[in-house]
Amino acid sequence: MSSSVHRRSVLRLVTGTAVICLAGPGLPGMSFAQALAEQDPAAQLVQRAADQGIEVARTNTGAAREAGMRRVLEAYFDLDYIARQTLGNYWNQATPEQRQRYLKVSASSEAHAYAERFGQYTGQTITVSRVTPRGNGVFIVDSKLTQSGGGAPVAIQWEVRNEGQGPRIVDLKTEGVSMILTRRADYVSFIRNNGGQVEALIKELEARAKRA
Amino acid sequence: MIASVSKMATRVRCSVVATAMAAALLGGCAVNDTGASEPWDPIETPNRFIFAVNRAVDTIAIRPVAVLYRDWVPEPAQKSVRNLLDNLGEPVTAINEVFQGDPSRAGVTLARFVVNSTIGLAGLFDVAAMMGMPRTKTDAGQTIGMWAGKGVEPENGGFYLVLPLAGPSNARDATGLMVDYAIDPFQILPVAFNWDFWYYSLPRFGLNVIDYRSRTMFALDDLEKNSVDYYAALRSAYTQNRAELIRAKRDKTDTKSELERRDNLALVK
Image (cartoon, rainbow over all chains, first blue to last red; front, side):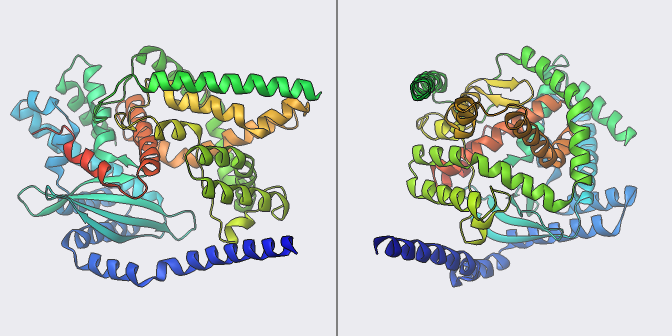
């Protein structure tokens, strides 16, 4: 008697959870949020950048893909801001001439990295879900990358910031790992291990750009 | 027999207490760290040495096997292997969920374990997920990080540590690894009942390594190719990833603190 009651309650728990899980994405609150997100300029920016990036990776290969990816990055990303941030405090040490060279080479190395990254995915889509405005004028845009070949969807957070030239993407975060922070840790450590000279990093990046 | 098991249990309990205390001491080191700075790495030189050895072993032995496994073993077989390994890890997750103050979640994890071990044929199939009990995974490193106190940012896990074979870790997560090992029934049972090392412990360990390596292939290759100092890039990425997991545990309802941290991040003005 008691065991059958117990079993029924467990069953109800299980089916209840199943119903919530199935109905979850279709709840009205969610679609409302999504509708709001679609009107948001930050969300639109991210969506357009992602769609164009995926399109470039899909339709081009090799050098054409990299060039196309660079155009997308230049159009939607604040590459100057990203470059400044990834150099950390060493930005202040760099001469104007070094800054120019660094901006140039870091843009092409980013383009190379993205071209390679997106080229390996197949049939992926990025859907923007939620926008969180921050007090300091920064927007955090949540999105999901889904692959047609199956596999778990990847959550990507985009940071959109306006540094005087309209809203631009400055960072993206996958599984908690920020592109800017990782890049900066990488570059700063390299500079530190090369006598604290920014020149060493720029030379290395330029050499890599030539090789690729 | 029973006496020896209980004696071992006492020993395990003692070591758990000892390691937890060690963790508390280590975790309490740098209070008021904003976490925005780079990970604390006082033993960078030995770490880099172990890192280099790991990379060599990986290039020669582990990565090639993982590539073969990823490309040649049929997808459903890979999935079943993963399910099997995940199922063996379920008790550890359940215990940690209890200590994280989420007994109901622990109950679901335990239910998953029971369902998958029976209907799911010893864990080969994740039947529980189809029944609406999705999988969660947690470890003692996260438990320690969760209770480390308000002043300790999740980015601060004590000193950074590269473990032989296991790779990036830190004082907090390495302690967690030992705790998980000590409380894992599927590590205790083989010792208690003398399960054959060659038929249980070694295959489990080997499959875990290959499965984990094949899953991290894409991310690690990307990081290696696009960094000038792979060691530093991985150190940063590992720290951020672990912090994200712990932060999600700490403030389930409020993700504001993370965003605030990023606002306050000492970026170049």
